[in-house]
Length: 250
Image (cartoon, rainbow, N blue to C red; front, side):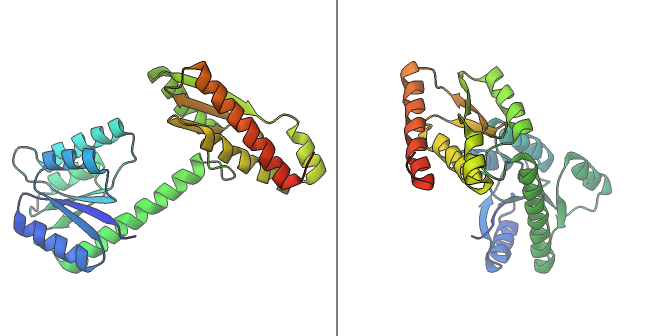
């Protein structure tokens, strides 16, 4: 799938040129003429893979737009989008300020097509590697849930901010599965159990694996006993069926 780049510049000529260069090199390009337009567009359509943001714009310049965009990401609960500043200035203090704020790179105007494409590709590649490392550090590979440390952090935050239900789930007598069928089967059961938990949860939730066969779930907005019972019964029934399918009748 083509990487999605939003270009923000009050100069329509620059927008057309950057859009043409990126589209020609297999990027999906969206052109916007103001920082305010960027914020409104992302609220409605989601965040892109990268933003090219002009510094010198009326009403809201690139620096202010950058700060407001980062605030918006926090409100939306999405990861930071890499941002490259666009500028025709040679002001080194302006460039230094941008890097101190966290901008990924600068591209000079008028555009050199090769330089623009290379810088966009380099930033996207670096950002992709960072996301991969962050995922490996936060996600339990077997289940795809948050690992113990990060589940504790995230769910603690949610418990302080939102109403819902906090649940700890584990597998009774799971040690017997490993002892009788081996650890490979044990891993298959844990992976299946994680999928069953997720598939039966009808409320927005955060899932974590906090031990060998222990899982932590915070379900936002889940407060009725009937809904909790429905979830519990669904998990138990599905797990029994899946265990019989994998290991045979008890």
